[in-house]
Length: 286
Image (cartoon, rainbow, N blue to C red; front, side, top):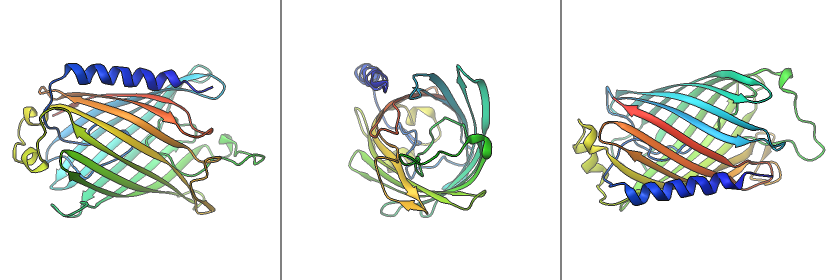
């Protein structure tokens, strides 16, 4: 049985923050956990954010997974991110599962859809549980699942095409995800799409850029809806709900003038092979 109360808890908490928080503009990827938009950090900006997933396996076992992310603004439109992952589960205890190195480059300063090229190297234990993206497929009914001990680590080159733009106060984004295994050569596919908008007084992206140099220009609250899932792999392509994970998420982020930020999400699994997640991140921008 899925933990549907997880999604309801996140939505209730988000509603409370929406009611009580004053709002302005904000930088960064806003409330999303999987989806990326076109914005990158300014040169010299640093953001540190631990993020956590709380969920349960089909057998009812609860687990806590985490990822600690450090974002570095290297140059105009160029960003480097360093990530470490792990999880805690009752039957395993604590396990550090690996790392990711990611870079994003926005190809142009301002054009329609603002294309961004993304590349990431992953070196992860196959048991890793933090959900940074969803791709590939689960075994079909009657098909044996590969034992994790047969291939203890995944080494993957992930690329994304990121398209994102602003329509009035809303920011719309779409990601196409390719995860190419450096072990067996199979490429798995996934997607993410969604929209976010500020609560309260909205500013345009141009106004946000013109005010860089202080946390006050970033402070505010942003709410978003995020859809993401798997689209099979090079051996079996498509959105088949019997073997692919698909999720819908309600997200909210509060960015304080001090540089601190908090974001939460309730992700509801839309297929039998998906799980429900409560997600939270707490970060600081230097």
